[in-house]
Length: 273
Length: 245
Image 1 (tube, helix red, strand yellow):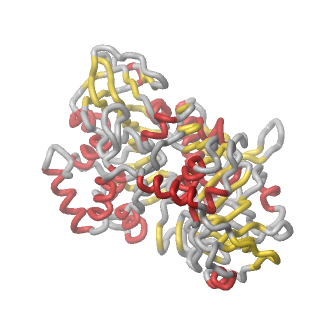
Image 2 (tube, each protein chain N blue to C red):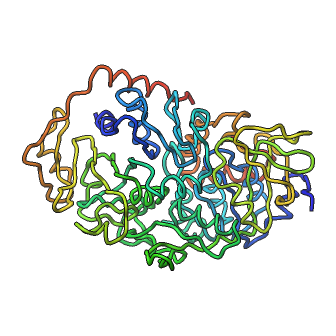
């Protein structure tokens, strides 16, 4: 089935439902910020949000009360410090309690790989001796059937929806992304439904070194959203807006300032600066 | 001085898994001074990055532009880190204890109701387990240097000798902890972190006062050599190279 190219609002309305397990992936680069903002505007609730590196768009989604649970491996504002909405939710249950399921990067990456591979779990060396298995039910010891070695198993990450951002797609909905592409291919292949927002739709995808191509038959919807990764960056399109990450520290550090920011976001078509 | 001392701990030509913040700054300083062939590996997927300026985050675009190879995140952990291909892991910490176990998860005894929620594990647990050896860089205060960490995010020497072997951790573990006051190394017998060097102008008493356990001081306490003009110039250049906001 060929990918449909639709407006962002339609894509979120069609793919993301209350209570879904959703990953908006991106490892510092190509973070689907605009898609996250549309989820907030449409007021989705009770989501299980998944992300290796939840940063400011997850801070916003948590502060907006969209999430019931967070599955993650590192939650911070890269290069700046803490995520205040994330902290406030865990430490003070504001705006509501947030359940967490915590992994290491290697563990969560392998959960995506297992799901993308159609396996029930992945096996790895990891977690042994740490306090993480005591608090995270999705980490379990396993014995190698061939050598008897003690290893660690993590279950496949079953996603309802994966949302990623890419540089471009063609008119048939084939997607191309390059630079640091993180775990985005695995996230799309792990999910029942997927949305790729792109900087631009082009007639033809010119080959790029090191590019990841997602053929249109594994992508559900594509939406053209120029600047859709701002304030993160899109390699060869725009740079990271480091000042915005610093400003977010002040906006998010106060519930009232954050609430005003959120009200402005919900009223406008664009994210407030 | 801490950054300079940490940079000196990285031998030229080694492959080094670099966390953001102080480790990244020190590793880039090493590349600009005594270790031009240091191989920098960032968890976002840059293998052999050669940034001309100090990266702002582990996924800074300059890392991909200058890397020998750009790979996916699962590949970084499964193909590069897990088999033990990377000689040195370079980590920061919120808390570190007597046996060099690291906490970057929660402060306080109750995981479900933490006093302070920290960012979490990131790549650190497997870096600490699988790199050939680990260097830790952290400021030394009684808040960060504790008898026992509130949460073991990454294993140093567990509860003492033999624990790493028992757990099947294949790297040697932390061989050096570099602070703003000096350098600590694990005692070969007890695995306990011991003060082996102080930076110029610091004495052992100051280091003991900033440590939350009864700190053992090595019989022959060294003093770190003063930073050279070359090191200081390279550090200034590096700090000036951060992108303007």
